[in-house]
Image 1 (spheres, rainbow, N blue to C red):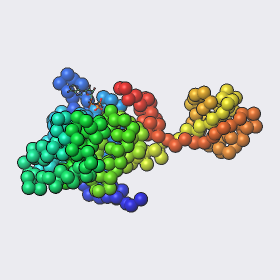
Image 2 (image 1 turned 135 degrees about the vertical axis):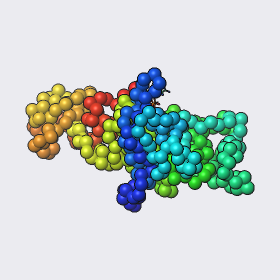
Image 3 (image 1 turned 45 degrees about the horizontal axis):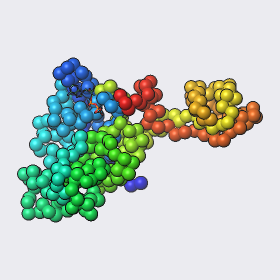
Image 4 (image 1 turned 30 degrees about the horizontal axis):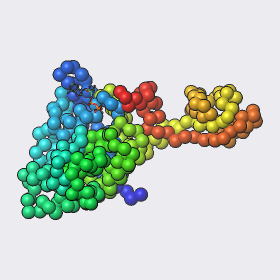
Length: 323
Ligand SMILES: Nc1ncnc2c1ncn2[C@@H]1O[C@H](COP(=O)(O)OP(=O)(O)OP(=O)(O)O)[C@@H](O)[C@H]1O
């Protein structure tokens, strides 16, 4: 894979926050002393269960609400004071696009473009055409927006965010409510935009989405940052679990326990457990011990650690998306 600016850690971060805090009027501490660093060129996944403070953070980043304490810089400018200078370089999609259902896709974009005082009307049609092309909606541009699938509506919203050249895209839960096909389309699009050199900051409560799409991630829980870094480092940092599939789970449990495997869990024919951190048994010996004791083994190996494992090991809590 080609080395990106994010890998090299070039230049000033695209987003940085210092002690960013938001306490709502009712007293709810939604974001608590957040220090976030989003490197240029990254696809940065802002991950957390519902209610963990992601939307509140995004609102502060974009200058839509004021922090109670601390600060944020966007593309090197302090927010909200630098909003007028910096926001033209930022495309954002928050809580779904505001579309007119009775207008077709192209006319919706023409309206968005006309609402931008810096957009030259003479080049409007070309700009809209390029944006439709970018999100794969050229063929559906003449269809009324109300006839679009949710995924198409979301892509039209992205096209609106991409009418002007952007350095940063901020997407709040961009695949929320989409069917698997719609999710795939948005994820592919996000990767393509990153390949074009746009830094993408997206929030999600879906662990596998972050693992599939993002180079970097920050994990939130109850308003606090749990961890941040590259997705690869994070998964490598957490140890995987031993996984054994067998029609003899109770015998297997006994043998694994005798060999120091801890936190054993049985789900039908599948057992999982942690190898001891110090002096772990050789996997080949462990497998041989199972077979020696008459355990029939269908599958045996280490499952790669997921971001969920990282979250659970750092917080001691399950990743409960229902919040
Ligand atoms: N305007 C508000 N006034 C008071 N409390 C709020 C307000 N907005 C959010 N909260 C509370 O702040 C906390 C964080 O909410 P936030 O919406 O930022 O989380 P989130 O991670 O984006 O979750 P979700 O994905 O469900 O939107 C929640 O407990 C929420 O109830």
